[in-house]
Amino acid sequence: MFFACKKAVKNEPLEIELIDESRNVVSVDATLIKNQIFFKEIVSNGKVEARKKNEIIFKGDGKLIFLGIKNGEQVVQNQILAKLEDDLIINQLEKAKIDLEKAKIEYKTELINFNLKDSSGNAEETTLRESLRIKSGLALAENEVRHQKIKYNNRTIRAPFDGVIANLDTKQGDFISSTDVLCSILNWSEIEVSFSVLENDLFFFDVGQPIEVLPKVGLKKTLTGHISEVNPIVNENGLVSVKGLINSHDDFNPLDGLNVDVIIKKKLENVIVVPKEALVLRSNDDVVFTVENGFTKWNAVEIIEENSKYYAIDSSLKIGDTIIISNNSNLSFDVKVDIKLVGND
Image (cartoon, rainbow, N blue to C red; front, side, top):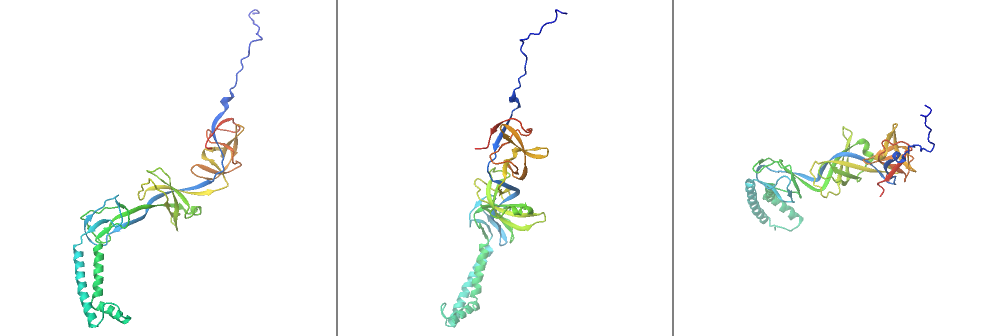
């Protein structure tokens, strides 16, 4: 047993575990707090409408003998859209013209009887001539011709302005009653958007205030506009109707009634603005992590307002502070971080 014991070798190196400190460093994205204006947002559902649109209504009865349009067709002002049969109206107009000629002859006879010329003279003669126009039937005959011409012209429906045809359900050959709607015509030179806001948000905006309009389908481009009118009535649901005009609509082919999101923005100054990614929850507190000398610092903040991308906060943070915006969900105080600055061009 004595010889089995072995002396320890004094010069044998000790095995020491080296700790790689780089494994405790967390890589994060960070950004600098900049001096910027925060825009508070209200988002509402809206519908697009042509500001200039009309229902084309017939002003007479009869068979539709011509229909030269279809839904979606572009028309120009005064273009003939449709015609009703007009044989009877033409006959009535011709009769009215004949009666007018008879009345003219009778009127001239009356002028001769009173030794008057057809025009000029003093006020007394002018009054007498007007009386003779009525007595001879000339005034009534002229009025009847005008009336029949109006009826005749109403048999032809023309476009009141340039636009696009919509809601056309009538077919050629249909019998039309007075006040029947032929179609609608939409002019998209000015595009209107209708939406509603809560009565509590009325203080938030004014007529002329900018808005953004984002179609829910189709064009993925945000359109700009402004509020054009506010209906001064609160409905039974506590909502107020608002209308806006879209300023620019290049590459936008609208449909009447198209659903859109309407965003109303208002400036909020003298606040610290941080991206939403910077905020995390710790012990029921809203927290933003800053970086000082390569280590994280915990900053409790109070949210004042928010929009789709940013928070406006009230805290001890200041312009120029470096805040962490990624990989911060599990961070704690005084953690060493390797930062990559982004969003500071």
